[in-house]
Length: 249
Image (cartoon, rainbow, N blue to C red; front, side, top):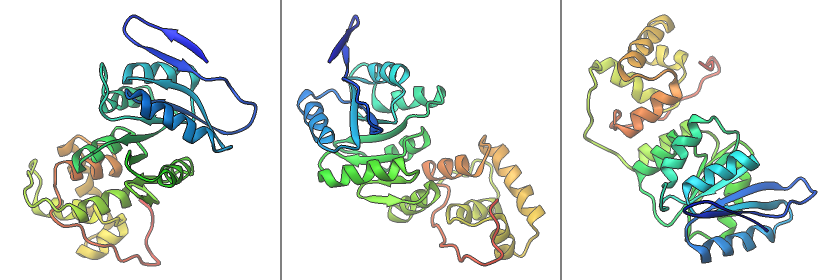
C-alpha cells in the first residue's frame, strides 16, 4: 500500500489488479469501519478497492488521481463533509459514480445528495448484501435509496415525495396551473400526458414549462423535479397513467 501524506491528513492507494473489477474508493473517517469495508469488498472478485480516504478533501484528491468507477462516501467527515465533497465533484463533472454510505440520513439530505450527483444512499447498518446490490445497481445505471433499487431518478423522487408528504410549500411566483403541472411532472408525466390531462395543447405545456423554468432558475425537467422535491412544491404526487401515445419529452 502506498501512503501519501499532506499537511493535515493522509490517504492510501491500494495495489492494482489486472482484472476488470469495479474500481472503488472509500472515504470514511472511522478507521474500523473503513478497514472492515475494504475487507468486505475485496472478498468479492468483481470488486477492487483502489484507495481509501478519511475525509472529503482527500476523497476528491483520490478521485482526481485514480478516476475510480465508484466512490463510497461517508456523509459526516472532518475538514470536508460528504455533501461538500459531492458539490465539488459535481462541478468537476467526474465520471465516477457515487454512493453515500452513512449512519443516518434524512429526506432532505437524500434529495440534496441526489441533486449533487449521488446515485445511491445506503445506511451503514444495512446488511452487506444490500451494499453489494446497491453497487451493482448503480454501476448498471440505476439508483439506490435505502434498501431499494430504483430504475430512474424521477421514480426515486416520486417515491420520496409519496412517503414523506409535506403540506407547507412556498409559491415562488408560480400560478396554480404551474403548480399543478409541477405535480404531474413529479408523477412522471410526459408533455403529451400533461396536455391530455389538462385538455391543452403540447405547445401550451411547453409554454408553461418555460415560465416555470424561468421562475425557479432551472434548465430541465430533472432539475425541476429536484427543486420541487426540495422545496415541497407538490403537496401530492399523482401516479401517471401511461398510454401508447406517450412520448418522451
